[in-house]
Length: 524
Image (cartoon, rainbow, N blue to C red; front, side, top):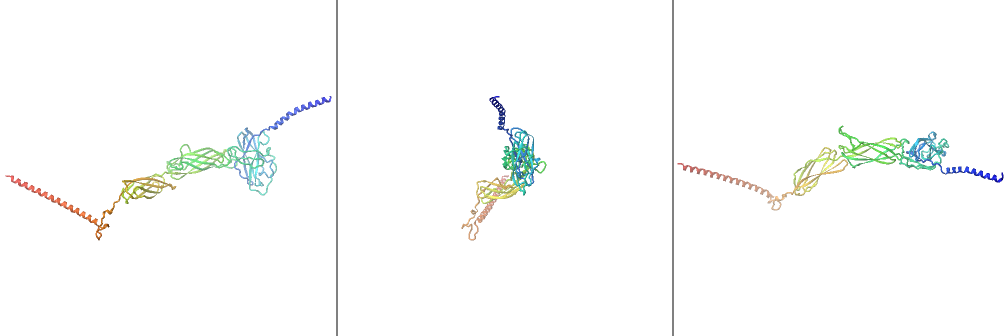
């Protein structure tokens, strides 16, 4: 074969080999440019985390949230110790506890929890430790995410105990410990958001967090106060009770809440005894969907206060039943005290006034009775009399017990003349148990006339109502003279009448004698 033909054969063979190799390289390059995207999964720390004491065992609960847009099967969670230096791992090693599997399927948007029991080793220094955790999913090589949480060991020990090397039994490759696990739900769990070997920064996040069933922290719901509408509750009236609640847990939401109000029973016998407060409609149970972590809420109910309640505070017991996000049942109770007011009820008797007309400077006696018909005691009762024509007068009655009678007895003095009867007002004031003063009024009429001047009844030549040097009064003499003159005149009049009567009788007798004489002459 000639040299030119051999060269031609070599070129053709080279072209054939290039045609076979280049497509494969292109496919590999394309695959390298478009790596498979790993599912997005978030790791959150659940509950309140307390520092580890030396030798103490605690449970760390992690919440795995699937935000990948697809369901995940055979999810496994394990702490990554592959790159830890000696002494950086604060816990005793028990390989059986360092890999936990989530049973079943984790649907998109769903969160599930796993728990790890860690015991702080005796030689661990007082320090802050960053613990990476990795999540593995069936069908994907290596960890799909590695987030770190922050733990704290206190009470430094004397002798550090270096930890052995890498954990060869750890599941898979945890990568470099990077990634982000910031949560995005309603403020329940704490979420770690860290880089490689960096302490965690906690932010409110993670839904459905709970501490009562996983890390021993129980979310507490307390009563922070209450209001009533109207502000004062009166016996026999309706009012709206609003109770203010707070979830004290910073990380755990509470839900499916049931509240029941229990008021004390009041009444002396079985027929009249009943709870002090009764719902105006429905029952004494109140339902609330839930309260977010570190959140507040109000519940309200309309109640009626029993009409015969005494004026005092009444305690209402509030029982609470609720669940955390893992459906752990929690029960607690609280109580509130509601002051009840009783309206004062009393009546006055009719006024007894003697006399009803007085002169200026004169006095009249005014009396009446105060009947306390209510259920409260009247404290420091006073009666004040004011009006045109009299001098202002105030008397103290004192305390009047419920069902008792108080007496009002006053002497009123005339001060100036009135034109006929004038209105006089009696104002009754009293205090309740709190010292609040109330007043009520009742009116009556009284006439004040001008006083008689006695000086006009006396006469005196010297202007001193005296006569002569002996000071004998003139007026009594005149009065005696008048009396004597009247008596003399009466005697004279009586004598004149008797004399006239005698004269009349004599004339009648003479007339009879004359008629008798005439009759005798006329007879033959």
